[in-house]
Image (cartoon, rainbow, N blue to C red):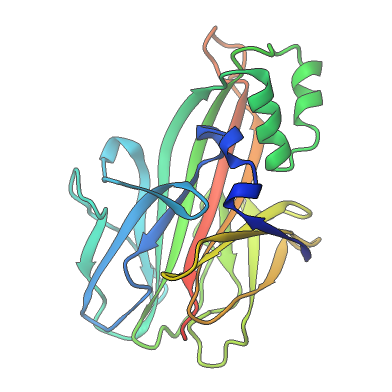
Length: 271
């Protein structure tokens, strides 16, 4: 469901939300490669679809795998690899799905206003009231966060379909943007613990080599679906976040108050 088209970076106020609002995604050097050709994909962290390439480290990774022709196999990266994924593409046409789940990290908000700003930006309408009702402090709000990322890569004709891979929170493409009959409207399913997430915010980032990235806000419908227009020649990052009370809150003086789970999906739309 379409809500509103937002302006570019400078008018969104992202500078007010430091590490807590940083997106995390998989970015391929090329989203369409020929069978057997070199394939490279970076792990990225940043804002507005621009960021830093992160090297691969096993102690920062809970899952890193490839799904092709219905089979999922772990990807064996080397410590310090950047791009994190470097391999020869499969030798047959098809849709390659790359999945990555980062190990949990933690942060402490610098002040109450930053936490409130994060909840407003990501549309967690009840989080502030729940925080105060639980008696959590307004200074040193602590959060644990995890990242759950996917990328769709066309090998040759890219024929195939995305599939649910069991990430704790996940964005599943219900249409294949590389199909010859793709009609410039993308539809995705957003899940949490395997169930559809209804009426939640989805951010869609769009960019090309020539154009600065822009973001549009959508909401999922009752079935957890979001539909949005896409443009040939553009690359897309779809992002949605879960915020929940941390299960271990109060166990120690440093236990987090909240957990956020970030889902992302990247793909390109051929010219």
